[in-house]
Image (tube, rainbow over all chains, first blue to last red; front, side, top):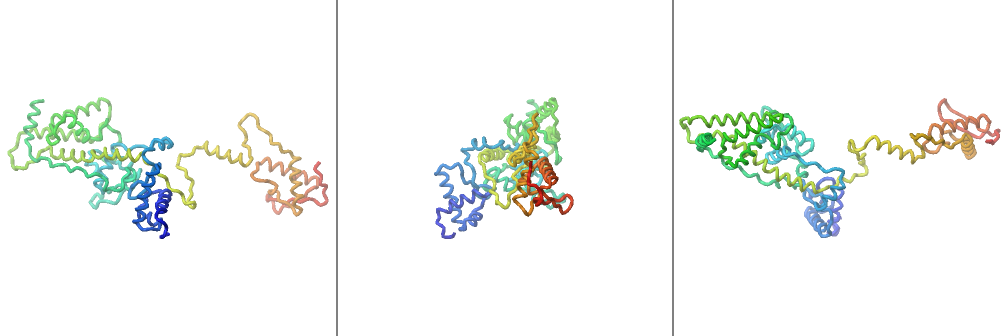
Length: 192
Length: 249
């Protein structure tokens, strides 16, 4: 196996990725192909190239910490028509909650609610049901609130390789501490 | 702010902070210098219009209304003698919350785009290890009618006709005569005897069994075959009666 000619490795990687249900890491692939990590990575790169050059309907995407065969977005309509039903979208409440958890994890429900200004109990339940977030323990305070983190499915749902792909949040600039707010307020009331 | 507040949604807003940011944008005012009186008024107008349309207003909106009114009154109070240079703007905490919320609400658009992109990608499920095959059925994927259809196919394959629901019930063209021939052929082919159950080939209907049994009784009566049964209700063995007349007619 170790003396297998290199061109075959990309075909082998294709076979392995085809049969896999989940994203495979380079280490997973190396184990399956009986080669080292470097060769596995090269095999994946060559496979991607070949799929592109031959105009394949498939592509290897880097997602949720690994590599996976996926249909090319160009053909989304065709595949979509074949599917029995259109996959749903997350609500804005769910996306807001997910954004907060993604950036601030691990985070508790009261902390999320403090940011959003509304209760999040049902949204959290939905996200747990969809396996986008998970409990990871409890904050060791008196109330011992549950801590939530995002899951690999979260990465998969948004086609992210890992959490580092999240764009940096812009830091809020300092709120001016003293302004002539009273003047502003009185001016406003006299005007109104 | 309770953990399990109901999931109804006020029109287009994800909560009081979202509504406030909307008002701030709409009025094109500086978030660091919110005209509290104006914004409070518009905020209350919104709540009133919802109420007029019989929409339940979540407690969070009421709490925010109270906060705004409190801010408004504090800002109208005459200046106390300034004790410290860095006296805090009463609006500071609210502004901080709005900014914090805005940061995350802003990334919703990014998530939305990723979600959209991802919806264009489709992945295979796992190929099963043949050892791990399970019925690949999600709950609700089959209906009762599918089961009936499957059973019908199976029965047709086995040559069994379902009792037709139509008006004409086809008669099975198997006579006692034919059953007797079947029994005789079997016992002649197997001089050492044949079990009653071995007379049938594949799944059978009750009427076939009864007919075959009647045939055996008839042959027994004529003395053509002998029957031996070990115990009541068990299968029994048939053999040609050496003294019998091998005739059917």
